[in-house]
Image (tube, rainbow, N blue to C red; front, side):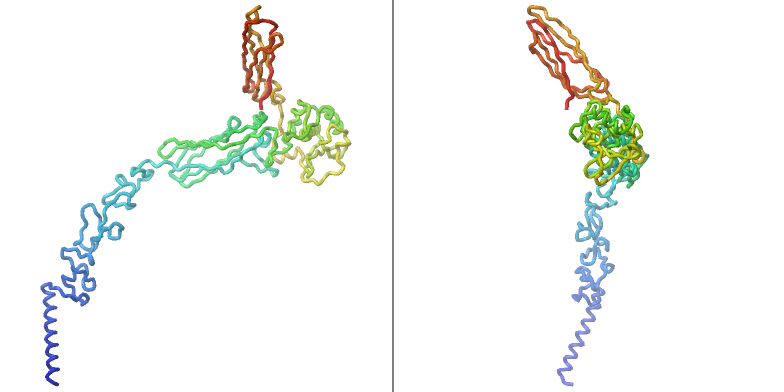
Length: 499
């Protein structure tokens, strides 16, 4: 070995000795080694955050080393007053400390509760937070209509209030779904009404959270429907009263527009011509179907179809009717004497089927007023349906109606006048006429009236009124006039049903 290699080996050995001495001293006196990752943790490495060599427990020196320590892992990193150690929180600082904020959606129970920050901590059962204050939670009760009928005819409601179809299946007039998505509620009272014409009240003991209850209103048979002789725009009203868990009363109300069609309409779904057949209201004429056809044909004038259907009493009162009016009039008389009439529905219209001489004949009321032979149909067009009157009453559960003549509007309206005053010639005439109006019928009347004064047969004064006369009511109208002339005084009173 030469001199130079020996010299190099000597230098290398000296360096190793110095290095070992320095490492030994660094462990004893805390001097820093710049070598992070050499397996030795020095004070300097703690400060500089050498995670490779230093663990948290090695650096508990009273100083917070951010690269290694935070408020959660070391007592060297305490949070200031009013802050919480939440390293994972979005608003945490470099030490892991987060300030407490009401409204951040996090309930910090060390500083917050439901009394001072219900936005974050919520409220006790039965209460809810509003503007950061706990109030008694309002109930979450509601209702929605499941079946809303917008129009039905009065004749249908009178004869078929359960809205039964051809299979006899009944349908409710109105249905709502009562719901509760909040606290338990109790003592429900549900009230329905269709103006002054029908009403219903039902009760529900209680509703728990998430519960739904259907409430159905089935009408009852009532003759009031036959008093409706013209279409009425009204509303179907629903009122729900109940109590919440604190015993506080609540009320909900809604109205739905409803057109109550006159008694002289037929509904498409639940109506039928059989509802207009009233055998108890007609007197038997003739002895068989032919004689009745001829007898009534001499009394009733056939008019064009106007889309309306009269009850037999109305047709007899007015002395005229369209083919459908005659159809139900004949059916009523035939039913009364047991001839088993039936309506025959075809593509060309509705005919009347009736027993005659131990067989059935088909009558076309469009030929009413003509001879019996002209009214009978030899070959019936394609039949879509045959409906016996009695079958509809039995199978559908419909009621056989009676039609009181006093239901005819204006039939039982009367008036009389009383003259008060005098004409003293030559220049002092003072007159007052008092009209006493009476509605003795069974229907409310809307009338318009006129009073006309004449002097020496010339008009000198007039006055108009339009008013409602409820069934069974009376009303007094007064018309006065004065002038400085005199002569032959007279008054004329006239009235009519308003549209």
